[in-house]
Image (cartoon, rainbow, N blue to C red; front, side, top):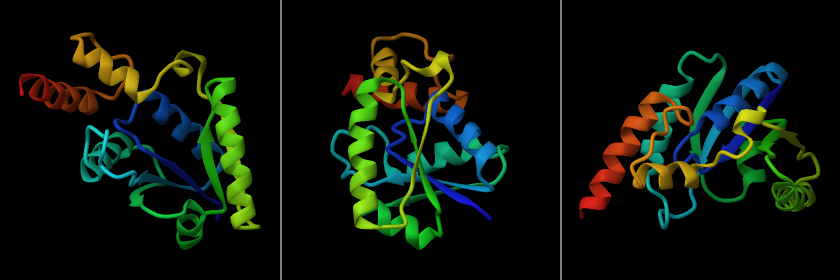
Length: 163
């Protein structure tokens, strides 16, 4: 059974993330989606909230497990039995950073492999930061995030704006 790990902040999960998960499931038997601990500074949703949104979003997608991790990605991947790590590439600027990380991870663990997936064209410009900004400014994000995520974003950001 081939297992892939898809790590990220997912603050919040977008339709672009979902697109990459669907693509990964075509290539691997099992997909572990892992919310990374980056300290809670600059993050809108807690790790638990992000995991809950991911579980709601992926409930009917198949062999997906949602979890969280801290520390080195290579150590976590090994502990989960993941053969490969999935990373999304939207633009050339993503490639430079991701390539550097992939080489460093390979250096830290000789058996570490990274697979780069490109999202559907309709999601190539999409990221969580833009989605949060649109909501903060009162714009619609229905086409960018799953419905449950949109509702939570509006509640959280309206509360933050009122404070």
